[in-house]
Length: 100
Image (tube, rainbow, N blue to C red; front, side, top):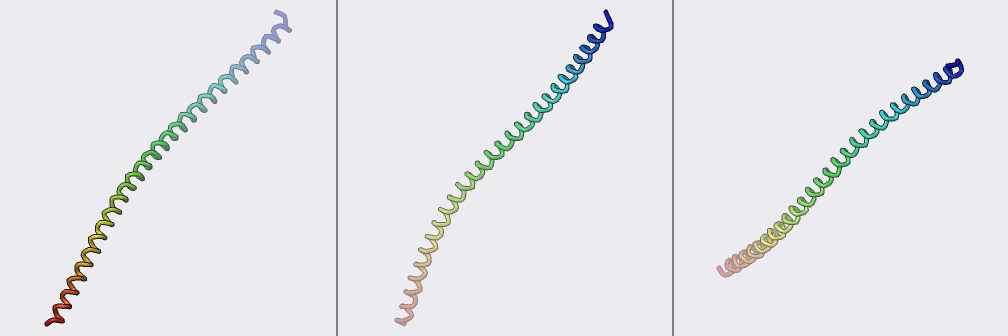
């Protein structure tokens, strides 16, 4: 080989080495990015699962709240009935005292 060809060959070899180094860096960067995406996807799934769990809990609490509200209304009706009975008994008691 002539000096000129050898020099061109060496330049091409160096250029190829630089290209291979750059390809390796890009592959490493790609792998890092893929790992980050996988991690973020996992976090998103966890967030969705948590959201679903909390929505279910809210629904359960709503059902419980409704049940307690109905029970409260029922107890209030019973209190009102008892209050009326007590009032009637007091009226009767007062009338009986008036007769005595």
